[in-house]
Image (tube, rainbow, N blue to C red; front, side, top):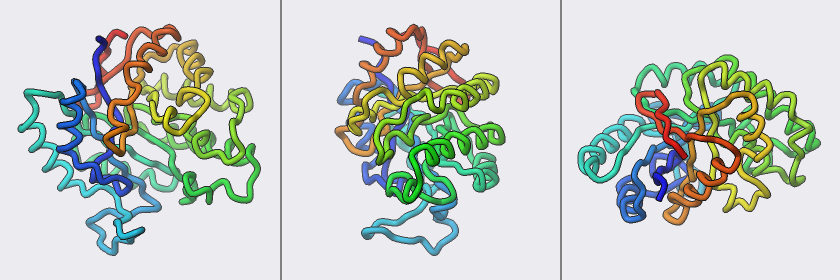
Length: 277
């Protein structure tokens, strides 16, 4: 059996999740998962840090970024308690926008991370998942702006490991599938920038539960990444619930192998470690 590793996980420290970190670890051990990297949400622009106070609430739950001291205190305690049974890494998912880059630069200086996923979840503080970003605009307009924003962010910000679910806009596109060829030029620029910076991309296995027609990022993007010389790939379930944990990880390893990739990566102290597929 291939290595069983999940590199995109959310816990009670993400405002859209109530899955207790210790329970995630216990469930992972039971499933035979050998390594986990916790990547709870930070989305400046639409969420406040706990330290700011004045936290907003939605359906009785706080809308806030990670409580960083509490996260690291619990992570370190869990690592000490379970470190002889499973490898645990500390990461976060930075949901970045052009106007929030400076806040992430400050956050990154304050803590030691093993791994950072850089994602675009909002543009101009407008959420994709609610449809407010797409509302009143053509499919071409919101797809074009999404990739332009992603390129702009990675041209400026470098303290990350991989791009998360690179074509995320597909997940929340009310008009349905948008062909890769229509954004091929700018996606090529994005991938070239990633490779030049020594960064990678994530394959996010949640495409199964969102019933997308292809992997995320899509097969054409993965093929292009390989053609351009990209080698750094991580695999994560984007877990928020027990049934998400570790889902389709090993099947995704097989798909990557079929596409000609030889390795996938884990991370330690922001440095990639290559594992043969």
